[in-house]
Image (cartoon, rainbow, N blue to C red; front, side, top):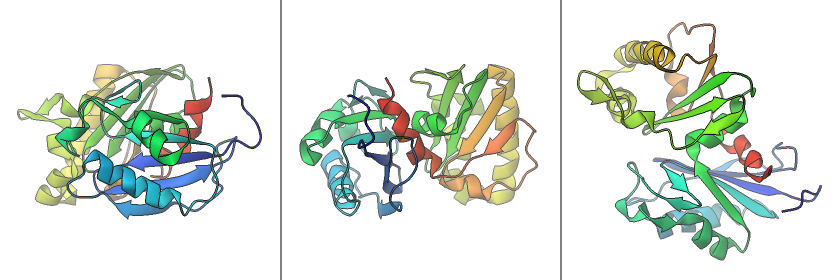
Length: 234
């Protein structure tokens, strides 16, 4: 699509607990206030699309749509959705949402979109998101390494990163123990990826109380929406 000053992007962040939207201008700056609805339960595709359409109707005019989705996405089709519903497997989210909104739609993993809004574009940069689940994204000199799902890899004590650090684990073990686990995860990821910078986002990042290494930075949750502009920079 040709870039013009009039291109307004509706940026959508689908999470396990909430669906959020706002409109960005051509440079990626917000034009509207973020609006949010609880993620429908069960979180089936058409229920979530209805929530997006409801939120979009309050955001004014927009020309195109960017969506961050909590799972593997290929060519606009969602491949996994551990924290939503099995009906998402093989669902053409880009196509169906485009039909509902009457606008072109691009879809990417939610942690990838958060990363696109956070990274500097130099060296090896990693992003993790702490929310209902555990999202991850990896970039090399600003280029995305696609479909990295670190959350479902083994971390410690026979459990994955998501099992140890997702919202259910946080509520079960409490802030102190969860923070100690997070520090171990940061060290593990540093050894595994030798990243230059790690950015931590997601709704539960506000629960971080530990002293972080100098090359680790907490980014605001809205970053997951701000990254939406980059999906249209061909």
